[in-house]
Length: 329
Ligand code: COA
Image (tube, rainbow, N blue to C red):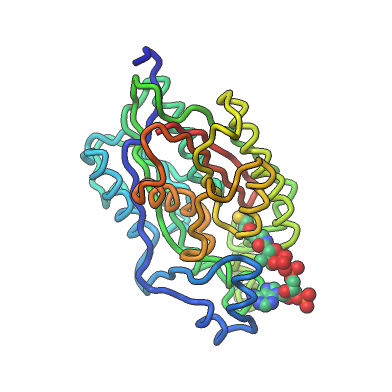
């Protein structure tokens, strides 16, 4: 025991749509192949929402699982933080809609627009509120319905993305565990390498720009790839330094699941063997802010993360944003 208040993850949950879209299914839609997708990305299949399902439905399911594990009632939640770039509405936030679905009574609510880094940004905010003792129970979520902003005629992007949600409950502890350090960063000068060009106030939707598919994700893949490797490696090194540990002491790295080759390059850069890297990209593709919390939940539930394990979460996404968290379980 120590007198210092740490912010610990006391429950996790995840949710993926039932509908599976395989590489073979994609072969029927665009000029691609199962072999190319596996070799260049590591993705075999991804989950896509059924008609009528929205992000807050998946977030609700993931949240209930996390709350059940942490034995948290809705009225005990002080804050709901939702990382998403594919909200149900532009206004109000997903956090507000989720508050109503969960029937929390005392929670502050806000969305975090940090793309694939959204969950780690949320964890960092939660850690600060818990350590300053302002709040005792914070629900952090990453949820995306990327299938709605994907151009299903563009083989450069449509093979990459999927839908899903992951959630975590963060609470105070006096024990020697919890979120030991976080690191956040960003660079807006590279925004146009990965963006949705229209639909905001600068360029509202028009019949013409919708016809030109400008309301879908546009990406310069190889440029994004290089930045992702550099930033995820840097963010991992920075958080290890902040936590005053070396990579030898890391039990598990949970990187954002964007591309198997980015994951392998990041692991090489921080000198971690692939046995210490959690990978589930083959099942879900890139689910943006949901990617890290889904992987964290699977790693915990499968027993890969044990009591005392030191785990690094790291992500990179549109913006660009990137960040990392060092957690002792
Ligand atoms: N099937 C078959 N061929 C494809 C294809 C597909 N789905 N997508 C692209 N290609 C083709 C390209 O048209 C190009 O053909 P060309 O040489 O005749 O022009 C060729 O494959 C190589 O394209 P390139 O973009 O150089 O491939 P790559 O090795 O960089 O892989 C990505 C493409 C998108 C998989 C890779 O760049 C990537 O993962 N980037 C990062 C994406 C990411 O992480 N985004 C989110 C960040 S959070």
